[in-house]
Structure formats: C-alpha cells, structure tokens
Length: 341
Image (cartoon, rainbow, N blue to C red; front, side, top):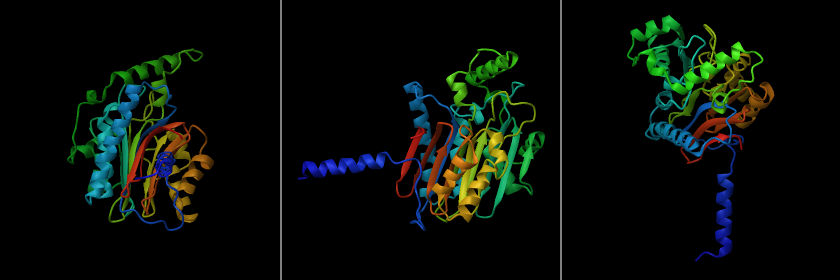
C-alpha cells in the first residue's frame, strides 16, 4: 500500500506535467519521436470570458482535428496526408476562418487562400482567391503534385480546379450569418471614422483567423499546410501571407512552420522562413527559434505560429494573447489550448 507521502509526490508530478508550456524544449540532439503533429485554428485577442459552451465547442473540435492527423501518422501515413486531412476538417468547421467559416471581403464575397509544402523536396503548391473549391488545401496539394507551377491565383486557380479532382461548391456554401454580420459592422465603422461602434469580442478574435497544420512522419519527412478566408472587409485583390511560400507556410528537412496573424506583418518578415533559417543556422533549438521570431522579429499583437522539427519536437507560440492550437507526438506528449499560459 502506498503511503500518503508517495501519493502526494505522485500527484505533484502529475500537476507539474499538466502545467507544462505549449512547446517542448529540445536540448542538443534530443531523442527523436517517431511522429509529431501540431495544428492551429487562428490567433487573436480572444476574451477569457468566452461562453463555456462555445469554449467547449472549440476544444472538442481541436481534439477531433488532432485525432485525425495523429491516427494517420500512427498508422504509418505521410506527413502530407496527415496535414491535408487535418486542415480539411478545420475547413469544413464553421468555427474557423477557412472554408465554410471564411470571412467576407469588402465586396461581400468569400475568397479563399491555401498553401502546402513538402519539406522532403522543397516542393510546394498554393492558391489564392478561390471561390468554388470546398477544400482549398486539397487544391493547393494538386498544384504541387499535378502542375509545373507553384502558385495559381483567382480565375487561374479556378481554371486549374476544373482540370483536377477536387470537390466544388456554389459560393453560397461559404456563407455564415455570423461572418456576414461582422462584415456589415466593419463596413459601418468604415463609414463612420469617429464612430463608437466597436468590434464585438468574436470579431476581434477572428481578425487574425486562419487554420494550419505541421507534421513529421515515421519516415522523417516534414510538411506544412495553411488555409484561410483572409481578413474581414479585405479590399479588392488583397493577398495575405498564407499562400506566400516562406511567409505563412514553409517546410524543409529541418522544420515545418505554419503562421496565423496579421498577414502583412507576417509577409514583411518572411516569418515562416525566418524561423526555419534561425533554426538551421543558430543551433537546432526549436524553442529558441520560435522565441526569436515571436518576441524579437515581430511586435506584440502581430502573429502566432506552430512548428515541428526534424526530431519531432513541437512548438506553438503567439504574441496576440490567444491561439486555438493542439499538438501531440508519438510519445504521448500533448497540448490543447486557447490562451497563453
């Protein structure tokens, strides 16, 4: 029979494990995990006063998305398959600003961007401004594998979609009432420069919304994928960071990165590649590279990132106050959360 002291010690250890931050610190040449995956559902300034029911819905969806990717990897599937299917789930869930839950442009339309990158060969595919593709990340993968190009835009992306096997929908499919109301309020604020018409907590939360996933598979390959509906009331032809390879999405044989946040800021710092370059040239420490990007390169409120390195170490950080996120590896290290610790 265990003594009270033993029970107390065991409970204390469990408490310490539960309170670990949302990244793993990797020392020199850490033990390699068989596989690892991390995902995000957008960064922003989400209030901790979020209704319990809504918070639970987010947490359950993050768990479900994580399970989809983890099962693929555990069964020997590729990093590319794991992140595509994970992002597909998030694109189909209107809680997130991608696919079904995409925000509206200033013209009242939904324009979707996505990118995917294979770290094993530095190949990538990206699309921007698509309006009839149910899962833009799947179209981006087709660009990578079934074309001679990397990036298709607007009508060109739709034409390419006509030539490959991806599910199409009427643009009305992407309509959600909450996102449409957000657009109307944004347009009203724009008309009244000195207006006291403030953003709702939900609108603030989704100013920087997007979804993404990164993974390492049992073969040691890394991959990254990101998908988004952009930003509410974005102007004609605006393109954010997500489909720009090296800005919002990047993977090589060292690390895979996906970003979420203020697209313009992410682009100006070529953020995903900046993290990867720091990791490669400054000593292979994912935690240090993530801290460098989030705390030194970017300013508070700019962005959040997820990353997985060649050892299967994952890191998830934001400087916006919150980021819907989840990660797990083959050893059972797991984190699911919304707010910064």
